[in-house]
Length: 116
Image 1 (cartoon, rainbow, N blue to C red):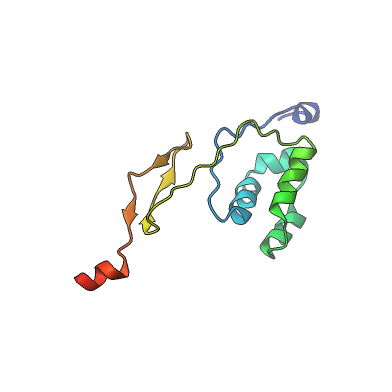
Image 2: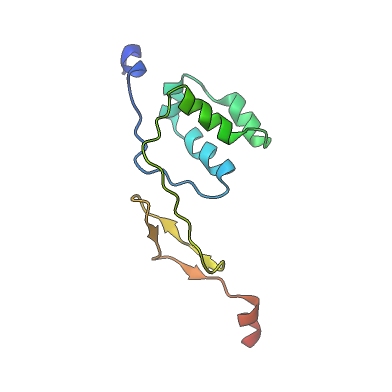
């Protein structure tokens, strides 16, 4: 069992965190699902969870408060977004933050369906 003093000095390293749109949903959902984070925050996040469920949590302000209180230290940030056909489905990001197209497919457009 980790002692209280060790817990106060521990770090959590989020190597690659991939957040999907809408960010208002995915950022809090991803972080909330980390029991170790809640334990290190010494907070169950129940108030934040209720606000989030009611679409009342300002996720950007909440994240900013974690950074301002020096709980989070963003080391590197990059934003990758696919541009192109909006009918592409199944594209995921791998653990290195690169797009993985092995299960990608195109949703048939209405124009293409009429031809067949």
